[in-house]
Length: 465
Ligand code: ADP
Image (cartoon, rainbow, N blue to C red; front, side, top):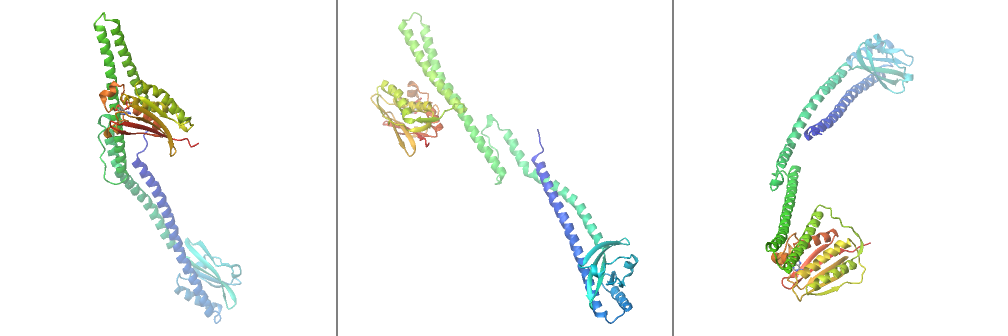
């Protein structure tokens, strides 16, 4: 199923986050604006009550009620906020009442009931007013002073601000989303380039590489990672091709030998029976060798595909070495060589597939026998060292040159092609042994001197349990 593009999804996320941010900002800004408007008005209302109080403190003792009213009228017209105020005494008698409030009959709370100053919002004659009432005491008598402020302009300003926010928010959102989409498409354009280039690479042109942008960012890393993966793939494919070519080559030689031997035998009729027998012997020997190569090839193919499983169990390594020694001794002695083995009583426990490990050791003993000239000797040793079980096979054979050491564990690799072929090796033994040892989390190696002999060793970790 084809989902929305990364560019689209990024823009959508950007849009969602921006919407939330902008909505949060607009709401906060509106409330902050409203609070600041009300704060200013409330301060002004409190100031006006202070003015009235001061006036009363100065004048009330020397003036009659009527005179006070007149004074208030004069005073209020000059004062800030006009004459929107009213004052009453404890009995509810008006000291002053401005005309609009009187006309609308705006009520007042008697001083006895007004413990705390209070603000109220009211509509008077289609005007919006904010009232502030406070109880004051002058000359020992309590009064309620109520002042009001016309709020029409403040509300209009707040409304304009609200409209501006409502209009600007969607506009900003549209701009931000278009910008976000454009930016993400621009940022992701090189990814399309990389995938187009990667699509062109197949098994035929595995040596081609993607162009790496020198940007030092994820795109550079992506291209480098893909290139590294291509290199690994190319190496694997090369090895596979090499393996197939080597395997066919290895099999062609014995098969053609079998064929030639058979052809020669049937060409001339009426041969003595001994000649036929000899030809059949040769064919049999060559067939056995071929099946061994085929078995080795099959085993390596299974290890490559991960199908060859080794089954680990707690095993006595001494018993494994003794098993290999028993079989190997015959091979060595049959070739006219001396044989010696130094294996302790044991047990020495390791986690191993006993059969596989015995096979690896046997490969080393077999090689020692094959590459040691008549009169030489082969010695098998075994010891434990630094938490490892170390088995070794030493021969007094032809040895291995320094440059060859690096290759002997490669598949189909033989130091002396002609001689090895003669002795039946296809160059697979050591690669099989190496695979087995590595499956045991161990290591395999060799110390050798050309013309003097070699010591092959296998190290596997001891069982800690
Ligand atoms: P092969 O079937 O040819 O013996 P291996 O993988 O077992 O294949 O060994 C690879 C090559 O390493 C051999 O062809 C030989 O040249 C060299 N080699 C292995 N073991 C010895 C040894 N003990 N002494 C000298 N050369 C050896």
